[in-house]
Length: 335
Image (cartoon, rainbow, N blue to C red; front, top):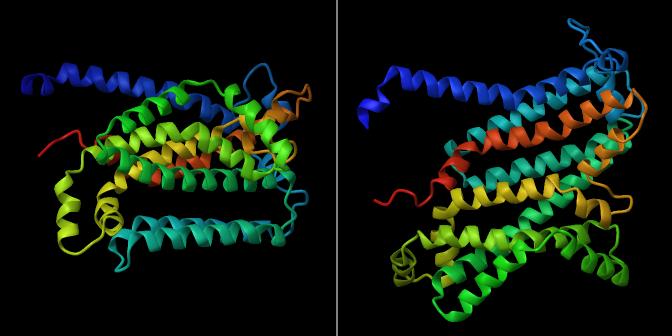
């Protein structure tokens, strides 16, 4: 095995395949980004136009109704805030305060910035869709992870037949198609007046995602020995205190990994958001309005919108990548 690892031909072949796969995966996004910086005439040209003069008009038209004179200054300040929040997040382990407090502060500052921006510039309707996506995504992640942690822990520690029945029932619900959830929640929303509200979409996404969350978190809890919480309870902790103070800190990689998958589900959901929301669309639904028309100028706006909704996810994955790797490998090595 060691000789195979040191084989230069094998290593070159593996690296070549990985590079080709990387190019294959990244090229569509880079092409879309280039189109977002072109004029409609350049983007719709049969022969790709290179080189070209990049323009930010597509992003300005997508996000703003009117372009203010001090837009460069505001953009620079916003960029500094984003860089500062990312830096604080990366340095969070070195601060003498709990990481949860640091991350909560980052989320709070980010939320304040998002709410203040419309008072500084005249934002377009696409910004409202972005706010809707943030509300739905955060709400879905918080509720799903809260319920999933408690349910996963309980099912990991309970050995009775009822736990097995619950797990298989959750698996059966996970196998159901999206339309099996759409119609009941649609009629429920119409009946109780929740149709076209964030709450209805959040509850539906939680129902769709909860079986996956419970199963995944349960597998992580199963890898934590019972003796850990038993030692905490001997020292005077209740079971809830042992769960929150001992088990959860050990489980952070698994929780963050599950939260990231939940985030991707909620952020990218199209069908449920399209049917259950009449006007409060999320970004994937809003983006579809730019791709179905025959207007040539819509192509560059669709490209700008695609890049705009992709970059936040890219930053989140890069920021939490070490936790994602730890979570995916959690329990794989027994010591």
